[in-house]
Image (cartoon, rainbow, N blue to C red):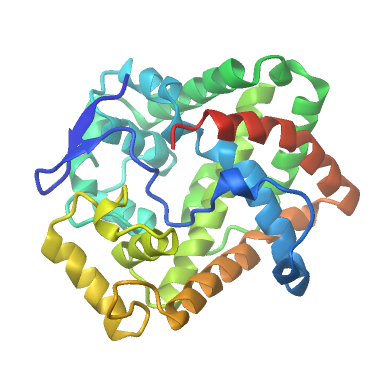
Length: 316
Protein backbone atom coordinates (compact mmCIF):
# COMPACT_ATOMS: atom_id res chain seq x y z
CA UNK A 1 0.00 0.00 0.00
CA UNK A 2 1.06 3.57 -0.62
CA UNK A 3 2.25 5.44 2.43
CA UNK A 4 3.46 9.01 2.97
CA UNK A 5 6.02 11.29 1.40
CA UNK A 6 7.69 14.59 2.27
CA UNK A 7 7.40 17.66 0.08
CA UNK A 8 10.33 20.05 -0.55
CA UNK A 9 9.31 22.19 2.44
CA UNK A 10 9.14 19.31 4.90
CA UNK A 11 5.36 18.89 5.04
CA UNK A 12 3.87 15.43 5.02
CA UNK A 13 1.80 14.41 2.01
CA UNK A 14 -0.54 11.45 2.25
CA UNK A 15 -0.29 9.26 -0.84
CA UNK A 16 -1.76 8.87 -3.30
CA UNK A 17 -2.68 12.56 -3.64
CA UNK A 18 -4.88 14.01 -6.32
CA UNK A 19 -3.04 13.55 -9.58
CA UNK A 20 -1.18 16.80 -10.27
CA UNK A 21 -2.65 17.94 -13.54
CA UNK A 22 -4.86 21.05 -13.45
CA UNK A 23 -7.19 19.92 -16.23
CA UNK A 24 -9.73 18.42 -13.89
CA UNK A 25 -13.33 17.58 -14.51
CA UNK A 26 -15.95 16.27 -12.06
CA UNK A 27 -15.98 12.86 -13.68
CA UNK A 28 -18.62 11.37 -11.42
CA UNK A 29 -21.13 13.97 -12.56
CA UNK A 30 -19.73 14.15 -16.08
CA UNK A 31 -20.72 10.70 -17.31
CA UNK A 32 -23.85 11.62 -19.21
CA UNK A 33 -25.19 11.46 -22.74
CA UNK A 34 -26.45 14.39 -24.78
CA UNK A 35 -25.12 17.90 -25.11
CA UNK A 36 -25.56 21.06 -23.11
CA UNK A 37 -26.49 24.44 -24.56
CA UNK A 38 -22.84 25.44 -24.25
CA UNK A 39 -21.71 22.33 -26.15
CA UNK A 40 -24.18 23.11 -28.95
CA UNK A 41 -22.41 26.47 -29.28
CA UNK A 42 -19.04 24.65 -29.53
CA UNK A 43 -19.67 21.47 -31.60
CA UNK A 44 -16.00 20.48 -31.71
CA UNK A 45 -15.78 20.87 -27.96
CA UNK A 46 -18.67 18.47 -27.43
CA UNK A 47 -16.75 15.55 -28.90
CA UNK A 48 -13.50 16.43 -27.12
CA UNK A 49 -15.25 16.90 -23.77
CA UNK A 50 -17.25 13.69 -24.08
CA UNK A 51 -14.14 11.71 -24.98
CA UNK A 52 -12.28 13.32 -22.07
CA UNK A 53 -15.00 12.12 -19.72
CA UNK A 54 -14.69 8.57 -21.06
CA UNK A 55 -10.92 8.32 -21.59
CA UNK A 56 -9.75 10.12 -18.44
CA UNK A 57 -10.85 7.28 -16.09
CA UNK A 58 -8.42 5.03 -17.98
CA UNK A 59 -5.68 7.65 -18.16
CA UNK A 60 -5.67 8.32 -14.40
CA UNK A 61 -5.29 4.65 -13.44
CA UNK A 62 -1.57 5.13 -12.54
CA UNK A 63 -2.51 7.81 -9.99
CA UNK A 64 -5.69 6.31 -8.56
CA UNK A 65 -4.96 2.66 -7.82
CA UNK A 66 -2.38 0.55 -6.04
CA UNK A 67 -1.34 -1.94 -8.73
CA UNK A 68 0.72 0.46 -10.90
CA UNK A 69 2.59 1.79 -7.88
CA UNK A 70 3.13 -1.69 -6.46
CA UNK A 71 4.61 -2.78 -9.80
CA UNK A 72 7.04 0.14 -9.59
CA UNK A 73 7.73 -0.51 -5.90
CA UNK A 74 8.85 -3.99 -6.97
CA UNK A 75 11.65 -2.30 -8.90
CA UNK A 76 12.98 -0.79 -5.67
CA UNK A 77 11.09 2.47 -5.17
CA UNK A 78 9.78 3.35 -1.73
CA UNK A 79 7.41 6.31 -2.16
CA UNK A 80 4.60 7.40 -4.46
CA UNK A 81 6.40 10.38 -5.96
CA UNK A 82 9.33 8.28 -7.13
CA UNK A 83 6.86 6.00 -8.93
CA UNK A 84 4.99 9.00 -10.34
CA UNK A 85 8.05 10.63 -11.85
CA UNK A 86 9.65 7.39 -13.04
CA UNK A 87 6.45 6.15 -14.64
CA UNK A 88 5.30 9.33 -16.31
CA UNK A 89 8.72 10.68 -17.33
CA UNK A 90 9.97 7.32 -18.65
CA UNK A 91 9.12 8.06 -22.33
CA UNK A 92 11.42 11.10 -22.14
CA UNK A 93 14.43 8.97 -21.23
CA UNK A 94 17.23 10.23 -18.97
CA UNK A 95 16.62 13.97 -19.29
CA UNK A 96 17.55 16.58 -16.65
CA UNK A 97 15.10 17.69 -13.99
CA UNK A 98 14.71 21.04 -15.73
CA UNK A 99 13.21 19.35 -18.78
CA UNK A 100 10.70 17.35 -16.75
CA UNK A 101 9.86 20.42 -14.67
CA UNK A 102 9.16 22.43 -17.83
CA UNK A 103 7.00 19.75 -19.42
CA UNK A 104 5.01 18.81 -16.30
CA UNK A 105 4.60 22.54 -15.62
CA UNK A 106 2.87 22.58 -12.25
CA UNK A 107 5.25 21.52 -9.49
CA UNK A 108 6.66 23.77 -6.78
CA UNK A 109 10.34 24.77 -7.02
CA UNK A 110 12.56 21.84 -6.13
CA UNK A 111 9.90 19.13 -6.26
CA UNK A 112 10.94 17.61 -9.58
CA UNK A 113 14.66 17.73 -8.76
CA UNK A 114 14.06 15.59 -5.68
CA UNK A 115 13.22 12.68 -8.00
CA UNK A 116 14.75 13.36 -11.42
CA UNK A 117 17.32 12.08 -12.27
CA UNK A 118 17.61 10.15 -8.97
CA UNK A 119 14.92 7.64 -9.95
CA UNK A 120 17.17 6.30 -12.69
CA UNK A 121 19.64 5.11 -10.05
CA UNK A 122 16.94 2.59 -9.08
CA UNK A 123 15.77 1.41 -12.50
CA UNK A 124 15.77 2.27 -16.19
CA UNK A 125 13.15 4.27 -18.08
CA UNK A 126 12.30 1.15 -20.06
CA UNK A 127 11.70 -0.95 -16.95
CA UNK A 128 9.67 1.80 -15.28
CA UNK A 129 7.47 2.20 -18.34
CA UNK A 130 6.87 -1.55 -18.57
CA UNK A 131 6.07 -1.87 -14.86
CA UNK A 132 3.61 1.02 -14.96
CA UNK A 133 1.83 -0.52 -17.94
CA UNK A 134 1.76 -3.94 -16.28
CA UNK A 135 0.23 -2.48 -13.13
CA UNK A 136 -2.40 -0.55 -15.05
CA UNK A 137 -3.45 -3.68 -16.93
CA UNK A 138 -3.75 -5.49 -13.59
CA UNK A 139 -6.03 -2.71 -12.33
CA UNK A 140 -8.24 -2.92 -15.40
CA UNK A 141 -8.53 -6.70 -15.08
CA UNK A 142 -9.45 -6.43 -11.40
CA UNK A 143 -12.08 -3.72 -11.85
CA UNK A 144 -13.43 -4.50 -15.30
CA UNK A 145 -13.32 -8.29 -15.10
CA UNK A 146 -14.71 -10.03 -18.18
CA UNK A 147 -15.00 -6.73 -20.06
CA UNK A 148 -11.27 -6.90 -20.73
CA UNK A 149 -11.60 -10.03 -22.85
CA UNK A 150 -14.70 -8.93 -24.74
CA UNK A 151 -14.81 -8.03 -28.45
CA UNK A 152 -16.16 -4.58 -27.50
CA UNK A 153 -13.06 -3.94 -25.35
CA UNK A 154 -10.75 -4.91 -28.21
CA UNK A 155 -12.71 -2.70 -30.59
CA UNK A 156 -12.52 0.22 -28.14
CA UNK A 157 -8.74 -0.18 -28.02
CA UNK A 158 -8.49 -0.31 -31.80
CA UNK A 159 -10.58 2.82 -32.32
CA UNK A 160 -8.92 4.74 -29.51
CA UNK A 161 -5.49 3.83 -30.87
CA UNK A 162 -6.52 4.97 -34.35
CA UNK A 163 -7.36 8.36 -32.89
CA UNK A 164 -4.38 8.50 -30.54
CA UNK A 165 -1.70 7.96 -33.19
CA UNK A 166 -3.26 10.20 -35.84
CA UNK A 167 -2.71 13.67 -34.38
CA UNK A 168 0.10 16.07 -35.32
CA UNK A 169 2.79 16.10 -32.66
CA UNK A 170 4.27 19.55 -33.29
CA UNK A 171 4.24 21.52 -30.04
CA UNK A 172 3.20 18.41 -28.07
CA UNK A 173 6.41 17.21 -26.38
CA UNK A 174 4.91 14.75 -23.89
CA UNK A 175 2.65 13.29 -26.55
CA UNK A 176 5.52 13.08 -29.04
CA UNK A 177 7.76 11.24 -26.58
CA UNK A 178 5.07 8.68 -25.83
CA UNK A 179 4.05 8.30 -29.44
CA UNK A 180 7.65 7.42 -30.37
CA UNK A 181 7.21 4.18 -28.41
CA UNK A 182 5.67 1.05 -29.99
CA UNK A 183 1.93 0.46 -29.65
CA UNK A 184 1.45 -2.68 -27.50
CA UNK A 185 -0.07 -5.77 -29.08
CA UNK A 186 -2.02 -6.86 -25.99
CA UNK A 187 -5.57 -5.44 -26.03
CA UNK A 188 -5.55 -4.13 -22.44
CA UNK A 189 -2.08 -2.60 -22.77
CA UNK A 190 -3.08 -1.04 -26.07
CA UNK A 191 -6.20 0.60 -24.59
CA UNK A 192 -4.22 2.05 -21.69
CA UNK A 193 -1.45 3.22 -24.03
CA UNK A 194 -3.97 4.97 -26.29
CA UNK A 195 -5.67 6.63 -23.32
CA UNK A 196 -2.31 7.86 -22.05
CA UNK A 197 -1.38 9.23 -25.47
CA UNK A 198 -4.64 11.19 -25.56
CA UNK A 199 -4.19 12.36 -21.97
CA UNK A 200 -0.70 13.70 -22.67
CA UNK A 201 -1.89 15.25 -25.94
CA UNK A 202 -4.60 17.08 -24.03
CA UNK A 203 -2.13 18.00 -21.29
CA UNK A 204 0.31 19.56 -23.76
CA UNK A 205 -2.52 21.65 -25.18
CA UNK A 206 -3.74 22.59 -21.73
CA UNK A 207 -0.33 23.95 -20.77
CA UNK A 208 -0.25 26.02 -23.96
CA UNK A 209 -3.63 27.51 -23.01
CA UNK A 210 -2.52 28.23 -19.44
CA UNK A 211 0.58 30.01 -20.74
CA UNK A 212 -1.47 32.04 -23.21
CA UNK A 213 -3.66 33.17 -20.31
CA UNK A 214 -0.62 34.00 -18.16
CA UNK A 215 -1.54 31.32 -15.59
CA UNK A 216 1.45 29.58 -13.99
CA UNK A 217 1.37 26.11 -12.48
CA UNK A 218 0.54 27.21 -8.93
CA UNK A 219 -2.18 29.55 -10.17
CA UNK A 220 -3.68 26.73 -12.22
CA UNK A 221 -4.10 24.65 -9.06
CA UNK A 222 -5.62 27.62 -7.22
CA UNK A 223 -8.12 28.11 -10.05
CA UNK A 224 -9.17 24.47 -9.87
CA UNK A 225 -9.52 24.60 -6.08
CA UNK A 226 -11.62 27.77 -6.07
CA UNK A 227 -13.74 26.54 -8.97
CA UNK A 228 -14.56 23.49 -6.85
CA UNK A 229 -15.43 25.70 -3.88
CA UNK A 230 -12.37 24.57 -1.93
CA UNK A 231 -9.85 26.85 -0.20
CA UNK A 232 -6.42 26.44 -1.86
CA UNK A 233 -4.86 25.57 1.50
CA UNK A 234 -7.02 22.42 1.57
CA UNK A 235 -6.53 21.40 -2.06
CA UNK A 236 -4.55 18.20 -2.61
CA UNK A 237 -1.77 19.70 -4.73
CA UNK A 238 -1.37 22.96 -2.80
CA UNK A 239 -2.27 22.23 0.83
CA UNK A 240 1.33 21.34 1.70
CA UNK A 241 2.88 24.55 0.37
CA UNK A 242 4.12 27.25 2.77
CA UNK A 243 1.36 29.73 3.58
CA UNK A 244 3.39 32.64 2.19
CA UNK A 245 4.00 30.83 -1.11
CA UNK A 246 0.33 29.99 -1.51
CA UNK A 247 -0.78 33.48 -0.47
CA UNK A 248 1.51 34.99 -3.09
CA UNK A 249 -0.22 32.90 -5.75
CA UNK A 250 -3.66 34.01 -4.61
CA UNK A 251 -2.51 37.64 -4.42
CA UNK A 252 -1.24 37.48 -7.98
CA UNK A 253 -4.65 36.31 -9.18
CA UNK A 254 -6.35 38.97 -7.06
CA UNK A 255 -4.29 41.76 -8.63
CA UNK A 256 -5.50 40.64 -12.05
CA UNK A 257 -9.14 40.57 -10.97
CA UNK A 258 -9.43 36.77 -11.11
CA UNK A 259 -9.87 36.38 -7.34
CA UNK A 260 -11.91 38.85 -5.31
CA UNK A 261 -11.34 40.37 -1.88
CA UNK A 262 -13.47 37.54 -0.45
CA UNK A 263 -10.98 34.96 -1.73
CA UNK A 264 -13.44 33.56 -4.27
CA UNK A 265 -13.34 33.59 -8.05
CA UNK A 266 -14.77 36.77 -9.53
CA UNK A 267 -17.04 36.78 -12.56
CA UNK A 268 -13.94 37.56 -14.60
CA UNK A 269 -12.09 34.70 -12.91
CA UNK A 270 -14.85 32.23 -13.76
CA UNK A 271 -14.74 33.46 -17.34
CA UNK A 272 -10.97 32.82 -17.44
CA UNK A 273 -11.46 29.31 -16.02
CA UNK A 274 -14.20 28.52 -18.55
CA UNK A 275 -12.14 29.92 -21.41
CA UNK A 276 -9.24 27.67 -20.40
CA UNK A 277 -11.53 24.64 -20.37
CA UNK A 278 -13.09 25.53 -23.75
CA UNK A 279 -9.73 26.15 -25.44
CA UNK A 280 -8.29 22.98 -23.93
CA UNK A 281 -11.19 21.04 -25.44
CA UNK A 282 -10.62 22.75 -28.80
CA UNK A 283 -6.95 21.76 -28.77
CA UNK A 284 -7.78 18.20 -27.66
CA UNK A 285 -10.15 17.56 -30.57
CA UNK A 286 -7.81 16.84 -33.56
CA UNK A 287 -7.15 13.14 -32.76
CA UNK A 288 -10.84 12.38 -33.16
CA UNK A 289 -10.88 13.81 -36.67
CA UNK A 290 -9.41 10.45 -37.70
CA UNK A 291 -12.66 8.71 -36.76
CA UNK A 292 -15.86 8.77 -38.79
CA UNK A 293 -19.01 9.88 -36.93
CA UNK A 294 -20.20 6.28 -36.77
CA UNK A 295 -16.85 5.26 -35.26
CA UNK A 296 -17.12 8.01 -32.64
CA UNK A 297 -20.56 6.70 -31.67
CA UNK A 298 -19.23 3.14 -31.56
CA UNK A 299 -16.29 4.20 -29.41
CA UNK A 300 -18.54 6.06 -26.96
CA UNK A 301 -20.77 3.01 -26.64
CA UNK A 302 -17.76 0.75 -26.05
CA UNK A 303 -16.10 3.05 -23.50
CA UNK A 304 -19.14 3.84 -21.35
CA UNK A 305 -19.27 0.44 -19.57
CA UNK A 306 -15.51 0.72 -18.93
CA UNK A 307 -15.44 4.29 -17.64
CA UNK A 308 -18.31 3.94 -15.16
CA UNK A 309 -16.80 1.20 -12.94
CA UNK A 310 -13.36 2.81 -13.07
CA UNK A 311 -14.83 6.11 -11.87
CA UNK A 312 -16.84 4.32 -9.16
CA UNK A 313 -13.65 2.65 -7.89
CA UNK A 314 -11.59 5.85 -7.67
CA UNK A 315 -10.64 6.79 -4.10
CA UNK A 316 -11.41 10.50 -4.48
